[in-house]
Image (cartoon, rainbow, N blue to C red):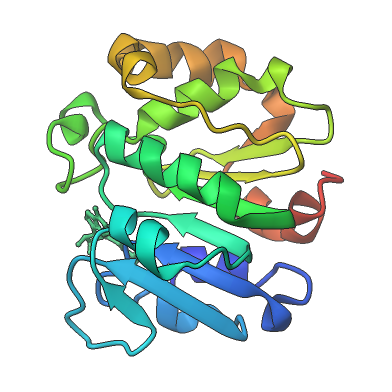
Length: 209
Ligand SMILES: C[S@@+](CC[C@H](N)C(=O)[O-])C[C@H]1O[C@@H](n2cnc3c(N)ncnc32)[C@H](O)[C@@H]1O
């Protein structure tokens, strides 16, 4: 099992959910998620997992998804801010009402983990800064939670998730903004460690935590 699949498997009725993982690698998370319908995308597929489309996430959204709607999308592909931004924007449109978006690598442990997009955490954290900077313009039913362990797991759901993260926005965000976001911007009730997130997963996924 992986910490991420343990969390996903707490989603009420996970067995009947439609799951997409962007960046599957060897399937450490993918193969342990108990959803009925699973689909993945990665530029490599070392374990030849049949449900994984071997292509870029951009090509997948453009040519393979065919307007299918999903209940749970895990963004964990390229960690370059610009690619994460495209994956976020595409995922927002592919998410069914009531669906959950989860993004990984939102809290790199150190600044030197942000240097290269496909090693360590890259600049994926810029998405987190963007999301929380825009929280007030999303509707009140939108719920965003952050686990600050395991390199940062951000859980988002609700009707107000907005696309719009773009290169200009990403260019303006630096590592210092992440520290400010973690310390001053994220409401304390939304920031937690992994154990708290797992214990309260059901309420987190239905927005009552
Ligand atoms: C951190 S690994 C994924 C780990 C996996 N989600 C898990 O939980 O075990 C990131 C993966 O993203 C893939 N990747 C990088 N850029 C990508 C892109 N543009 N489109 C799709 N996959 C990409 C890499 O090949 C790599 O396998």
